[in-house]
Image 1 (cartoon, rainbow, N blue to C red):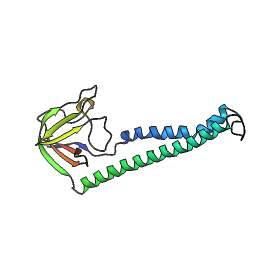
Image 2 (tube, helix red, strand yellow):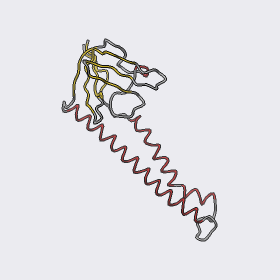
Image 3 (cartoon, rainbow, N blue to C red):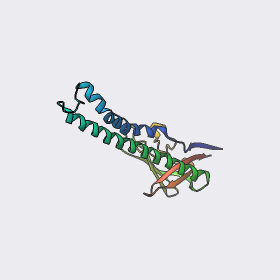
Image 4 (spheres, helix red, strand yellow):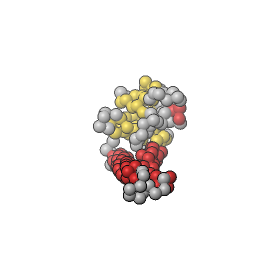
Length: 173
């Protein structure tokens, strides 16, 4: 009997952190709207504080646009990475290893470590603190790889750093 334990899916939770630069950018972008409301008349040329208003206005625009572009570029890269990995699975352009989990090391609940194991000499390492498309859920947070001796079939790709990214896990019984 075969049980699919994990299949690659788009991880929206890893996109949530991207909203931090977006929110910071919006804060700076609208700073020049807030500044005159707190200091009436400051947006009139020659008024006391006008130079500060202009400074905040330009700072808001520059930081706001930079943060927005950063948000968009990282989001596009994340979606592109997912699409590339999904296409690799759909076109069977993945590496496959099947065997017993060996040298399993669980990540402690407190974190500050990674979870790793080997199957037939192929090393896998992950942590839920890493944001990428692929399997990264340790056993202490409900992960499916939990101990030595599990017989699994894993489909994976190797990224440019040489790290094996798990895209599919199936338990073979």
